[in-house]
Image (cartoon, rainbow, N blue to C red; front, side, top):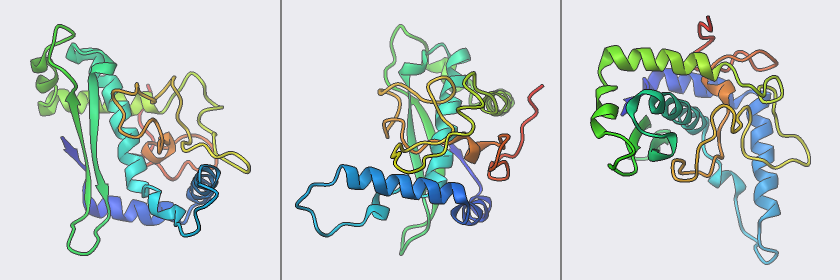
Length: 203
C-alpha cells in the first residue's frame, strides 16, 4: 500500500483542473456518456461519473507499478491487481490518495513472499524509480505521449496504451479508463508541467 501526501496531491489537483488537458478529458467523458445514454433518460449529470484528477494519477501509478513489480516478484502482470483510494474530502469523509497492489491468487504462478519482500523500503524505492523512468517512455511515442481526445472522439484515456501502462482485465478495476502518463511524469509536449513526479532521470 502506498499513500501520497495529501497536501501535495491537493496542490497538484488544483493546477490540473485548470489545464486544457483536463478540459479535453472532461469533454471526451461527456461525449462518451452522451453516446451511451438511453434515449429515454432526461435527468443526468455526466460530471458525477467522471473520476477526479487524483484518481487518474493513482490509476496510472498503479498500472505502471504493477508492470514493474511483476518483473521481480515472481508473479505475471495478470496475477496482480489494484485497489484505488482516490477521492477529495467531502462532508465527513476525509480525502484519500492511496493505492494497494495485491495478488489475485496465491498459486504456482509466483510466491506471495516475493511481492511482500518488495515492500521493503530499499527495494521499493528502487522499483519505484525504475517505474518512473519507464513511464516516461513508450514504444508508441510520440503518438501515445500526445494522445488527447478531441471532437468527436470519446475515449477515456490520454497518454496510455497497451505498450506502456494498460493492464489486463483481471488487474484493472476501471477497464483501462482514466489513465494518462502526463499526470504521473513530465512528458515532452504541450502539457509537460502536469507530471506529479516531474521529469524522471531516464538514463
